[in-house]
Length: 90
Image 1 (tube, rainbow, N blue to C red):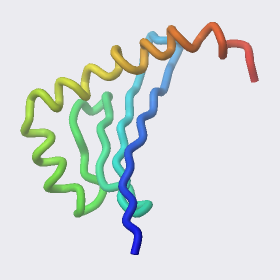
Image 2: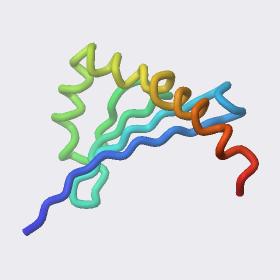
Image 3: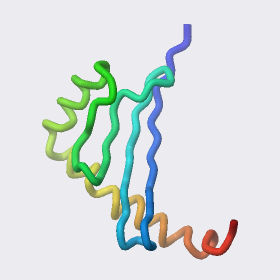
């Protein structure tokens, strides 16, 4: 039997980097069980399996601070690095 767990991160840009939304999703066996949404500011359980994990993550200030900083550290940084190569290409 095979069990698969993985995460994925997304950056959504509105009007350049004027407004940026960061999503960090956690998936187990093709089912989304938890995610962080920078617009909400904390982790949300998407299934009963994620409830205890989310409760723990949200109780740890350093974990929340790290997730909240991803908009600048990960999204805005990658936008600035990638823009010269991507803007105008479709």
